[in-house]
Amino acid sequence: MVHVRRGTLIVKVTAGATLAGSVAPLAFASQSAGVVTELPTLGSTISQGQVLYRLDNEPVVLLYGSTPVYRSFTPGMSPGPDVVELEQDLIKLGYGQAYGLTANGDFNFADEQAVRAFNRAEGLPTGDTISQGNVLFEPGPVFVSAVNAGLGQSVAAGGTVVTLDLGTPLVSVQLPSGQAAGIEPGTQASVRLSAPSTVLAGKVTSVAASTGGNVQITVALSNPPANLPLTAQSVFVVFDVQVLRSAYIVPIAALVATIQGGYALEERLPGGRNRYIGVTVGALDNLDALAQVSGASLYAGMPIEAAS
Image (cartoon, rainbow, N blue to C red; front, side):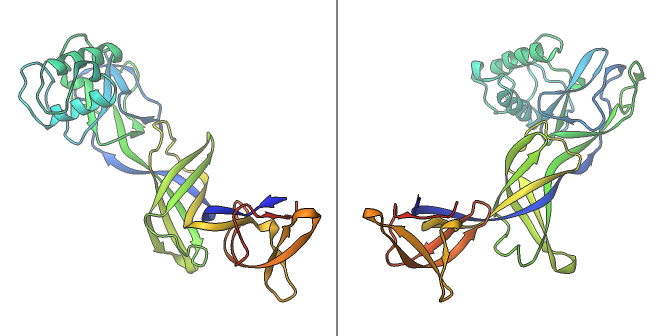
């Protein structure tokens, strides 16, 4: 026995898809001269606050920002957008809260203390200064598409150590146009990965006609993890095509086909008696095997029979 439920039914469409990094090449060269003492792994993803590589055993740390690093960060420097970006990074990485740091572009006492904490944690030279060659600003996580220098190699200032791409993980789906009905930009989606096994939230960003009567759908992840591989992998996508609120919901297995061609539910009555009541079937959630039903005799909590 099960019960009629009243609540929200989400009609879903499922599909296999491909998750891969959409890359935009970044011009990047070493800002300092030195001997290469650590390199990233080819194909790895580097995120905010992580080390890109080391020269003379000093790290070059990735920070997020659109203004390139064009000077060192030091007490007494003039305000600027680069300082704002540094402050935003320090706050995001947890180095500014203890000192009341705000992203106002003014390199003040709070900045100095936050920089000292950042330098200690990252293994940079201690003090309240960050040298120009020790940090790199990029708009987001980067994908190491080429390693251009070897361990122990001496590089001149401006010499290329690694080639980076800006990695944006996107999900690509092809569906027959009939199955894509109701999927449009803004539709919520869940992306299920097998390695590692996890579910990520996403949203449809584009829907376009493709070949053979198919539709090409692109999904952007809402908050991709920093360690998400950007190499192509197969995933499973669930689109929330339609959200029905205050609907009567029953398991599909509870629907009984009638001789007249419609459907009924078998209601369990007191005293061990049952009766059939006609219902109209609306939307179906085939993934969770649920159906929307309507009918004059329905009420929330109604006990009904369902095939096991």
